[in-house]
Image (cartoon, rainbow, N blue to C red; front, side):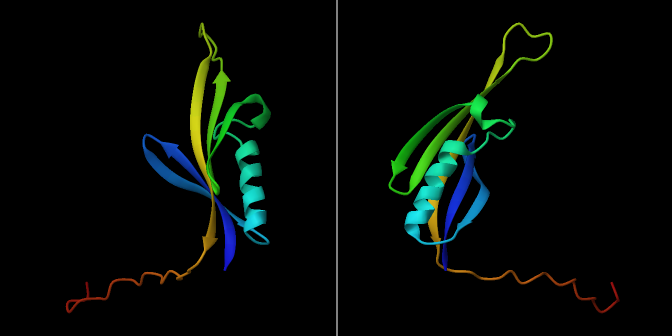
Length: 113
């Protein structure tokens, strides 16, 4: 069916799927795309990925853990604030699709409600 790169944001022990990147080609192309994504994905609240700190760990042949750090200095503060974000980047093959059946409005009861 197809290969994807999945991007999950990890926060307070919970993971949220924040990206599904379809990949043209096979598993090798998906692996290359995932590694590139791990090296270049921008932090959540920063526009420039070059100004952030980045640690990329390959945790298995098909997944990476990325730690991104950014720093900002707010007016009136004595020191900068550092923010840390964690991402899981995974290669996955789509093996099944079931389309959503849209919900229907509730049926009116005996009394027209």
